[in-house]
Picture 1 (cartoon, one colour):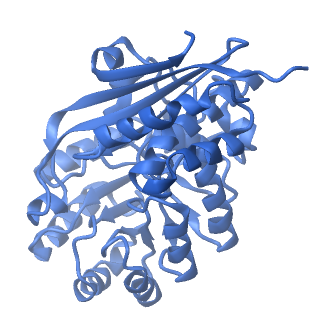
Picture 2: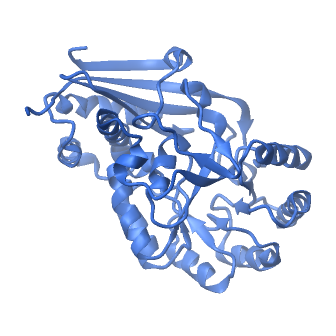
Picture 3: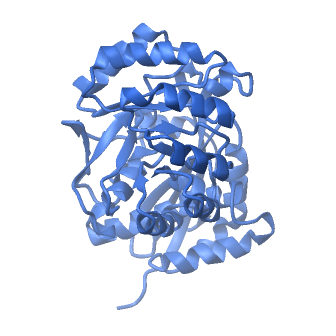
Length: 375
């Protein structure tokens, strides 16, 4: 049978506005401004035989236009390629943009294309992506973050946590890392009391502590039975994270801000995390994520991918160890379909591929687009 070929590529830059400006510790410590929107790069790929796939990457606060610009420069190289040869296509695109490196914006731009190719491959097979990869489970433990940001009063955090549990979500994560650690401890204690001891609870400091402060916080909350403490230190401080992981009973989670497999390898080799949190759009797509997942499993690490549940649900379902997926409803307006949560777990959809189609609202939020080949 003759190989199929890519005949059309559409790239779109989309800006998703957030209903309420969002603040975490980086805002309260003056390092960033509240987040009001998220920039997305969408890639839609169509083949000669009429098969199609859609993928996306994203950036918060800055970098979205740069991702789009890089994808626009290298995208034409996809035309005429066999969409099944994802590894070879990925390498071709890397070489097309070799002078800007193999991490950060460069590979985040390629991530949208790589994810679209995997979506296409699974759709052509008539399988959900998780099944194509070889899933271990049909649902994944899920926790909610979007109700626990620092801009929200503690009463709102408690109410939204209760609503999340009522909606079938299994765990709750709240933000910490404020200039006054006592306020973090007060809010955390209030949430734990509100939820009770049986509900899985995580905290996320968004890199705002030094090593001594992180250790002090970790020791202060040991008795709360947290599932993990996330990003207590600078994302690139593998040595510091390793020291914390060795000193505390509470697991340490990190990795979401890293933008390459190589950077995660350093975490793994340093034993710097008990829970690794790669983000497929940030590390370069599903191809890179799968390489990383193999290394993480070999090291005995738990997996909790960051954000983008629409992609990460499938990848987590194919991880050998029982993982977590982060629930964020922020992206719902971009897609026609919704993910189901039940009994603390997120259900892998039975739709082929990732199982999502772009909404008309997503099209309306497009700020720039380009096409290659014949539509």
